[in-house]
Amino acid sequence: MSAPAPGAGAGDEEVPRSAWPEDTRPTAGRTPLLSRSAHDRAHRARALPDPTGGRSVRVLTVDERRTVPVHEGGSGPRLVWDEQPELPLGAVYLGEADGVPYAAIRGERSLTVNGRAVDTWTGLREVGADLDDLDAGLLAEAVGILEWHERNRFSPLSGAATTIERAGWVQRDPETGAELFPRTDPAVIMLVHDGGDRCVLGRQPVWPPGRFSILAGFVEPGESAEGAVVREVAEEVGLRVADIRYVASQPWPFPQSLMLGFTARVEGDPTLRIDDDEIEEARWFTRDQLRSGDGPRALPPTVSIARNIIDRWVDGDLR
Image (tube, rainbow, N blue to C red; front, side, top):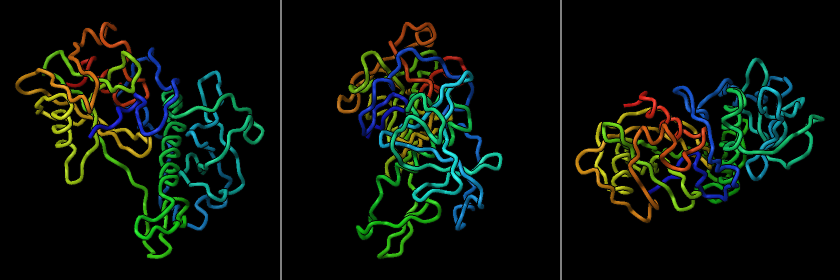
């Protein structure tokens, strides 16, 4: 059961071509870029009648395409926040940083936000890698929680329209009284290597020509993350793997995944036997090919955990 490779753009919605950059810079450091955060989610405040404590709040508008207002400054892009005297009706409380509350709300595009010019409306895939830690963490949270609201307007227990509580973090079934909480779907993403200088990269048919990434798939009910790694690799490329090592995780709110990154070493026959229903093509690539640019035409963009794992393996940080 394949999952979209993070950053590659595949998913359950149409992805704009701007999310498929071929020329992207390498990542740096051990933390995937969308795992960065500099704010306190302040989860206890969600139960208060006013989680902002009477303070003004900065509100981010997310439109139906999951794009947000951005200002292009000299030091890089920054989100354009709307300063509001109180938490607006329908907004979801995100937490706070440096004593300032933050929230997100669905809305329409505009040329200005509270008198501030908007240079562009763009999405997490396109701008996430270039934002600072505060904006990146808040944007990932905002997109994820609003997607949950969009997809869960009715109770799975009774079919009744839910009511929103706890500053947007609980939906209640009005007929049964049950509380419904945001959900996250775990998925594994793994760099499969031969214990030396080769790794397996594959591609899905919906990707632009020449783009390759590491393998990925959803964790099934009753299955461990490590078990999912073994199963998915066998299903997609017919390899048996061992020495499975956890690397890092990254939220991927398209719509509600948490990517769990691993490396895995091939045991036995390294011949690739591709499942055409899962992926279109898979090949072995060497570190030198990936380092020199003689490998795939395009790797996953910088914003993805896939690129972080590939870059760390090429640099010898992962074994």
